[in-house]
Each structure stands twice: as structure tokens, then as C-alpha cells.
Image (cartoon, rainbow, N blue to C red; front, side, top):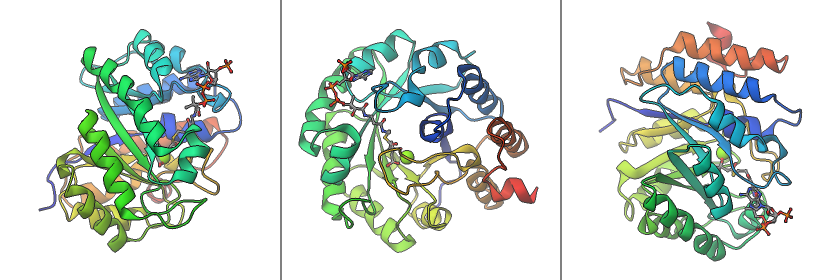
Length: 295
Ligand code: HMG
Ligand code: MG
């Protein structure tokens, strides 16, 4: 049942860097993305076309996306919350975009300044425009295992939003434990419920590691047959609109675990570790990955 091959979606340049307070130079962002591609990652979330007032660190999204030396076979995706963002992303040469909503009303308001139902109406024209341009759209759902503002999130909220995003044309739904609060059986049950409405092959895991549960939660969902996992090199990241959220699970940890289980990722772990060290050095920090520290 466990997939033999897993697609890693590297979200460090977006989810990771969006949370950095100090300005990260455009050249550093581009170098990070190019090194990740060299390490064998075939899907890299590179930036967000969001309001620069909301997330100042992403204000050079256009320069980053258009400045990357692209490698054949690699997809460079971006976040586009509305048509304005989508049009800029298209101009910068995007080939995959993501819209992002939440299963919690409180978080939706804080993160994208609208209710869940308003967000769905905002996504429709983005998805339609993307389809017209033959661009794949991923749909994110935040707070699938809990919310920093409202606490518990009923699983039905996750299932309903996933079904709506899927019906409108999102080809993949990434389920976000934004504040790393869930535990394995909860994660597995949530995935099973969503998989009743959206094919499991169209679901991805996006687990932050705030409480050290991410790998265990991923393993629990792998047993269901999930084959797409989001991760962030060196465990960079967090969401500026989720109080107390720390980074995503480190890509190094996920790749180490998967390779140890005989699962293919196409990633060169040594090069990935070097990339994690490159970005940690740029911030004058130690890499957050324990695999990196051990090796
Ligand atoms: P708003 O203020 O409601 O939007 O923000 P608005 O349409 O009223 O526009 C306000 C201003 O923003 C205007 O500028 C617009 O032009 C500008 P002004 O006239 O005041 O000068 N604007 C834009 N500028 C550039 N690009 C755009 C854009 N749209 C409007 N696309 C909006 C609504 C969604 C734009 C805002 O709330 C926003 O940018 N939010 C982004 C928040 C964000 O990026 N959060 C982090 C990413 S999500 C995440 O990390 C979770 C995830 O990892 C999964 C998980 O872990 O759970 C995905
Ligand atoms: Mg995230």
C-alpha cells in the first residue's frame, strides 16, 4: 500500500523564506532554488504573488521567478491568491500556481482577509484563468488539524473545502497542519475522510513540525498510499499569520526516512544537505535538520 515513489514538493523558498524578518536578497533566493533543482527536486515552490504589504519578503516574486535558470523537468510553482497575483505570475513565466484557503474561518480572515466562502469565490476566476492558459493549479487548505485562533477544526470543514477546490479544477489538494499540532491517528483519519471525496492520488501532505510530530504524521498517512509530500529544506519556515507556527518538516528528514524505507524520491541527499547548509550559512544559523547535523 505504501507508494514506491514519492514526489517531494520543496516549499522552502516560499513557505520558508516568507517568514524571515530580515530581507533575503533576490540573488540568494534564486541560488537556493537553483541548488534545490541540482539536488534532484523536481517541484519547487518559488515565491508568492501576494500583497507586498502583507508579506514584504515576497515582494520580489517576479524577479525571482523570472530570474531562475530553469532546469528541464523541474516545475517552479508560485502562490496566487487572486487574479492580480495570477496575472503577474503568468507574466513572469509560471507553469504552476496555487490558491490557498483554510478550514478555519478565523484563520481565513487573518491570512487572506475574507471568509471561507468568499475565498472559494475568489479562487474560481484564478482557476479558470489558469485552465485557459493550461497551467496546473494546486489548492492548499490550512489548519486541517487545528487552528491557532479557534482551536479545534471539524474534519467536515476540511472535507467540504477539499471537495469544492477539487470540483472547481484544482488538480492537487495540499492539506496543511499549519501549526504542527496534529498527531498520527488524527492525521490518518483526516486524510481518510478527505479521500472519500477527492482521490488519494490528488492529495498532498503539508505538515509543519512545531511539536516534532511531522514525520510520525507523514508515516501514518504513507500507510494509506499518499504519494506527495511537501517539505522545506533545513526546516525553514512558518506562516506569518499563524501565531507560533514554526517551519515545515525538513526535506532532509523526509528524504532520509523515505530512502531508508526503500522509497524513491530522485533526490541526492548529500546535495540536499549542502543546500540546507548554504541557506543556513546565509542566515548565520545552524541547519534545523537533524539529519544534516548527524551527517
Ligand atoms: P486585501 O487587502 O483584502 O486585498 O488582501 P485587496 O484586494 O483589498 O487589495 C489591497 C491591496 O493589496 C491593494 O493595494 C492591492 O493592489 C494589493 P493598494 O491599493 O492598497 O496599494 N494586492 C496585491 N498586490 C500584489 N499582489 C497581489 C495583490 N492582491 C492585492 N496578488 C490578499 C487580500 C489575499 C491580497 C492579502 O490578504 C494577502 O496578500 N495575503 C497573503 C497572506 C500570505 O501570503 N500568507 C502566507 C501564505 S499561506 C501559508 O503560508 C499557508 C500554507 O503554507 C499552508 C499551511 O501551512 O497551512 C500555504
Ligand atoms: Mg505552510
